[in-house]
Length: 517
Image (cartoon, rainbow, N blue to C red; front, side, top):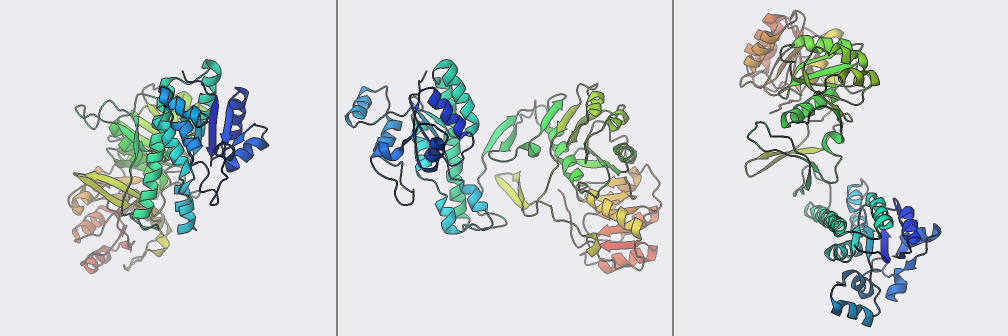
């Protein structure tokens, strides 16, 4: 057990500083500090000794040099288990330091700022802070190091109740400290390697991941699996809570991710209540209406067979009426931004049903994603470009009316979340047929029509990429589709448009492809 008699506190992030300082002072701990940290502690009535009083030297170079001194680092690095180290401390009158509470200049935030300058960003490269952190972490047998303000209460509680910090606590704090400095140095190296400026896809990528979940297995029982989150990021699904149900599986997480991302396309304040049903990473039904119940009934009607064992996402707080309406359907996972008490009561009757409460997915144009391949990764900007239906072009003689335009916008949103080749047939309120993941586009057309449970007359369709031949247009039009949205860009666009004119249907060219492999 390590007693703490003297602490060095020097922090940029002042969160919890006064509580830490007053807590240490009450325990009789002498506090050594620097600059703004010392001033804030003193203003809060906490006795504090300036680093310059220990070193006998003032801070210089606008604060660039203040703690880099043998009387500080000797006090941190001395291994007090060794008599010669204790003798040297005494010979040079160096006070031993038992606790180092340091956090660093916010380099990443500074570098990411829209108005960041090179000189300004360089000033946010901390030197003394990481040095003290590494020194204390190296000497964790004799010194405790704290880099995260959320650990202050834990440290104070241990000192109050046990009179010191155990070996396990110090080792854990040291591990956290080394991870912190590793991440900090890597961020600086990335900034330098990537030209110290914005780039759509950086020249080097630093990934630091920590395991947060361990499903029983991966896609199949013979595959081990784990779920990781990026250190310093917002967490899986933006930080979610599992309110009830069995542990999440690998496939649950993939499908929940797909459902959340599709639901986010209907997240605007002008959007109606919308329910998304996903199976095997593809939508099998999407509906919208005046209520979530109406939206659910419309989504389910598209493909009630595939909805068995599905994942459901909603774009609003999950209400009791929807929970009651879903009572007869077997669902693996539900994800929503919130749940009303009545919904939790109804859904709680299905003990194995996994309920996830998580913020809505909020894609940002310019963000990017990685995907593993053998020996490396593919990196690309996420498909988050906003759509502007008002800018779509209509080359056909038939022009879509207001109802068709609303339906085409709906179909296009669902289509961009469906695996290629993707064909989505809808009316204004719901998906009618979905063809996904086929090797030829006309096969996706046929599957979408074959799966339709509802009347196809007067429906519209969306295609995630251009039609290479007119056969897809012919197939859809013959089944009753009256308008199509597709990117255009084929060498046969004239032939495709002519086919639409022959059938008397409208066609909109969006100008943007949405392949999803």
